Length: 186
Length: 186
Image (cartoon, rainbow over all chains, first blue to last red; front, top):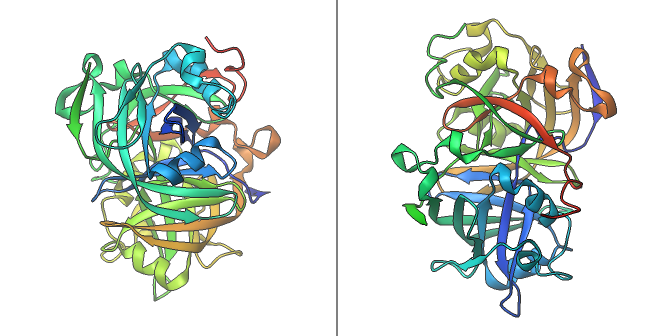
């Protein structure tokens, strides 16, 4: 039996990604976001939904670009902090001692210390309600060499990703190959 | 040092959700999708990107509704199968012996056996490229009573969710509370 719990958002799970932008003064800002995900394969695109009240919203509107910086577990407290503080009030990089690197592809900075970065230019802006969704075309992905696995993907064991699912949680055991284990359905 | 790996999609991670729809004949169909996620809080919305070639695409265009059915690990092979086969060729429910239930809120079916269901009506349709993104307003969430935790959310330990991250992987250990552990940044 299923029970109705009403209309709400329930991350099952949601990614925990950091959005990098420049403000009007050219200062690098970062903001943690979970209403995000991949939304197209060709061109490769991500969707990022932000509230208009965020400092990052205005930055993206002005620059039409952002980065997605994917944190590993060692940066979990910094990542959480970057979802709490506002770039209006504080230099979020200086506060935690991490470094901003200018993308050479888009008008946005990324977090030098984070293991994976996607550089994105805005191709659609959709007003939904409390949130505005920016669809960014991924122009390049950069991966820290120390965690690079075969086939141009990160080594998941070294990456130590975490997700939003009733708090932050790590990634568990390998369960099977996609588009493969279902060929003989139970 | 970071290495460029080019423009592509890299799930870090992506959810593994099943989209429920009715076809023109009123037959229930399901399709597994990972280019999905929450995209707005008020109204609560999910974004689901599908290729036009999928059977589900036409169903959603015609009915302007879908469900998101969230599978637990015990249904991982069925879920993978539902991302491989097409509803044009096969009755995906009959093939695996699971049951379709008609939503009483939207014109779409859901998977009776899956632990969590979101019932959605389409409020935006965005052509991106290879994929069309449907933004669906969540009208209700229904959770299997046996896995219901406090505060109207599923008990994550009982839910046994999995994600797409270099294959399918389970959820790992609890790492901390969101909007909390970062109040004292390192």
